[in-house]
Length: 272
Ligand SMILES: [Fe+2]
Ligand SMILES: [Fe+2]
Image (cartoon, rainbow, N blue to C red):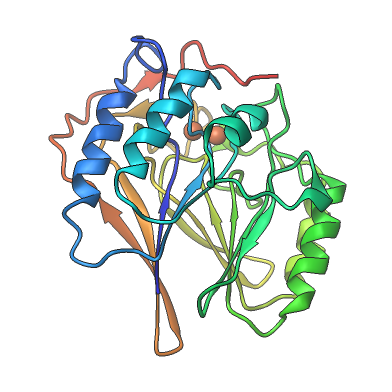
């Protein structure tokens, strides 16, 4: 079983550059061209948030048209630059949200040996994440249904400290998530938002962040770390299950990356 995790497209529906620097539609096209060259077809694509740069409708239409052309099952959760209502309306089939936990976009995909569980940590109008009480109740009950099944848990905001101080605003109500994860040791946390791969451990389980398919976070662990980006090689995660082993590969997208930067996240929008 192969699951590709793609994060942080930041697609714009207008012709402007994301953060005044990056042509994210070009990044999307390069990503799709790369995916078409893969030897093994994935069983699913999971998009872990910041699909749009400012939640505009046309961005979702562009993204849906581009990735649908691949013909692979695709699933999405929102990030801080997204709008739930537009994702539901404009990404048909990609957000099969459980109505029990509306308006949050949470659901499971259980047609393979690894269970995929998607949760919504978006807090409209805010850059930072929140473990909504209703989502945590839903997650607790959902994971309890199959406690012995290996599980990839996808969420936009990482619940763990990344070491990039500007990004390390604690996720609200994160203790509720910690309590659920402690009961489910076969879970792997798969996040976006950081625009750089990190392999960590949180509450006893593996925890990873995906590189972005667009701009990468500047590598700076100093005081200002997490506030700038650089045009490094984009990438994604490939989760591979075979013979009872679950590996997460960090993959690169072949581009002529300039490594220009660092640049600030100018004009950042978190839709309300
Ligand atoms: Fe992002
Ligand atoms: Fe984000």
